[in-house]
Image 1 (tube, helix red, strand yellow):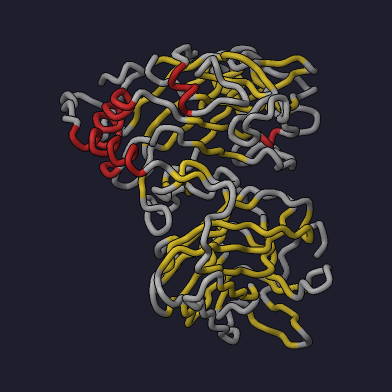
Image 2: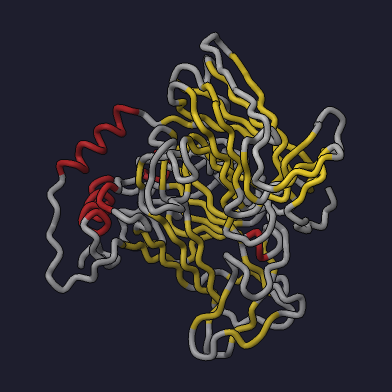
Length: 457
């Protein structure tokens, strides 16, 4: 496949036969035996129906055919899938992407059915640079109709898929998955459930939300989520919140160090983003609001974060132009707004009275089992349908960073320590005092009432 992505006509040419898009393809049944360490691989092109996909040959020896040109909303359907007995499995996919920035959801029964697994797509180096992603899932019993659904906030193609595989009966979980302590989590949940709700006043704004207001704390080339115990292994980060955050930070060390650049004081969490540079000089955020809310249709089932919960939003490896109108871009807020673009078109230039801003939204559905995952995203998912379910049944607060930078910019534009504007990302390492977080989740999110930084109405 060419590095230039062009949608072709709905007619695909495969082995000299014209196939109409969405036409049925021979069903390939997948059977997963209950024996130990059984792995079954299914070729992505063996779909029964699809929308938006094209079948092409891979360039590597033995790769065979792949399904490509997949963008947001495209899907693949596989009928008559025999999953065998219910239980835990490892789901993998061989994928390639020049841009990243999306996810592949495996759903059962329907396009909007329960999520079996979700694989986060990062840039792999090209449309033929293949890599294998893995995640865990709980299989339902009996024959299933499976859908692979593409989700992306961008408008273009973001992934090619060579094959899927499911491994059952594995004795241990893949490296990088961090399980929570069930006893501690059950105790935290019990205390949350037993906590009385403070009724919101009659005039309360019915928006499920509370916040932490933060200032810049310090900078380090550390990342305790991606590169734990490896000081200097990352690009430069601008840290907010817990002032002790470093490569060696753990949930225990964060909770033991009460110094924070955020209010309220019981929020000892660590938050960080790549450092922004203007003409080689660091520009640190002058103010950040970390919103905790809900984007679900029903926010009443939301629970607090367990201690030590970690996740990342955005993609540090994504390096592509971000002109005006792109999703997840820097913008200008205030009088005059955006006055123009940088010479390369990737950055806004703000009017003298306006401020450079960025908003980053994190995932809001959780698998209920893991504090972290190998890519720091596969244990969580976005609620695209307004509900949490399937492999991600637990509703957690939707975290959103809103960052303000004290600059208007220029025609020269900016750079990030991670590269282009498209590489902006953020990390959250949660360490709230339990009761303080529980009260805010119950009073503000569950009750659907807008709260201030102090947790009041």
